[in-house]
Image (cartoon, rainbow, N blue to C red):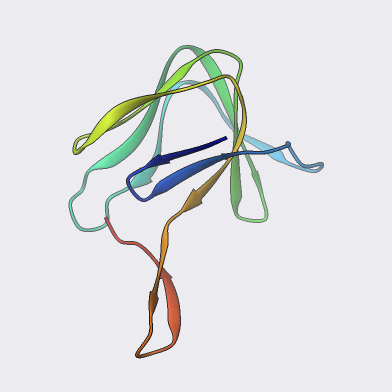
Length: 102
């Protein structure tokens, strides 16, 4: 299962060994718009947990959780564990890959 919300992807995943808890709560900004100042925010009626390992964020939802953004349709994420990823784009002239800037 993959949820795509603008330039943020949540990809269903296993929680790897050695993760460190980053956050537990009902609301968390998971991505900030570098250009617009808008943000992707997770909002839940019950707490969820975010973990980090080697710069990668993992999210564990035990209940449906919403992801919101000022310019995108709200999505409801089903319970599970997800790896957060950001869209990338290729600049064929410079032969580089970079994160999409919102």
